[in-house]
Length: 511
Image (cartoon, rainbow, N blue to C red; front, top):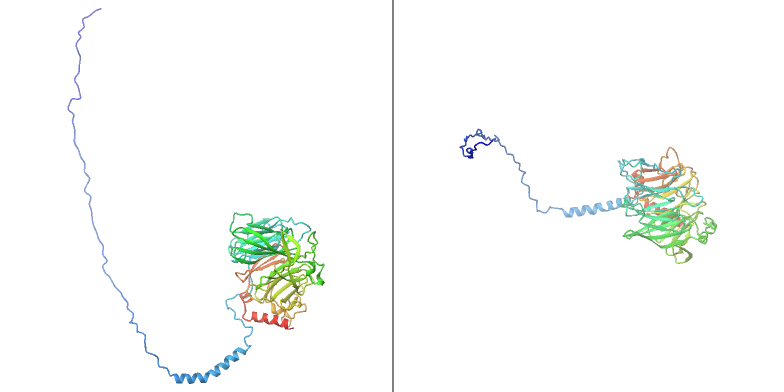
């Protein structure tokens, strides 16, 4: 089991010391060839121009035969002066006004505005144009009120420059919980709109803030429904806003646009004893604490004297008033004591006064319209007798002076007819002329009549565009609004208009 063992080392040679074989190789691309080429225009041409040398102006004085010229002037001057005097005295061109050949001769209907979500009893109760003439605001309400007003109402705004969507829906709608009987755009700021409610609130909105749904300022009339609203003056950042109410109040607020506040500064009250004797006990409101108040239907300030204003009342009286009154009435509204304001009265009507407006062109001219379908032209210098009266078989609903032409008056009827009259054509037109039919002397004949709609309805509101005088908006009791473009020869001033109006007013005073 045991064998011999040789304990001898075993090894093997190392391989890393062996010599390694290396092989060298290389590669080369072909030489890159480069080629240059040039191009050159073969021919060139030049052209030049030269004006003739300008002749230097002559400095020599022209030779004039002065004695001969003087003799000629002495000979012809008397004849020329005589002809000029004849032309001055001539009446050959009296009443002549040049007509633009390019002017259109008929009215053109531009837009028909209708609010699709209008409630069933919606009536256009007011219209107002922005100072730029681009936006028309439409107030909606109801004609019937048995007690406290809780009708759904709104103010809709249309931009007539956006023709692609103007007839589909209004650009903006301000919804309120009471009827809106009156509204007015600011006279110089197109973004400021004021409107009043039948419950006695006056709201002022800044339309430039499209996301804002609340007014920047709100005033109160003490619960009396507002019937008329207008801006009296604009003094920088503050403006005066006036409102007339069913309670016989005339309230003047100062509106600060920067501070967004409205402050009641002055108020007036029309009482029973302010009316002419034949009109007393007619139109009294009869509310507790306001038994002496007479319902005011319309308000207008004199264009030249802002202290003088005109009021129409429910019983038919037309009153001349002044803001300079100092007599206390004993009645207060929102902490402001109301003053007496009536100075005198005009020849009244036998029905509710619907419109009274001082002329924007003449200090002494004014018009009144009542439910007796009589349109009267008055003079401040002769208040007890109208200058002229126009009767119509169709009941009239509104009357407005045109903003530019001093003799143009727009009237509307319950049949949907809108007529434009010459104020001087009303003179001595005391007999009924039917529906403004033509007479032998053309007294009362309209200068222009707008075609009535296919479905006639009483016209409830009318407003001229003061920025674009050819545009007029007409609203009716069915909630429809039409924007018409009038002929320029009808609305543009004529050279003799002011002289004719002066002559009519002066004649009335002399008589």
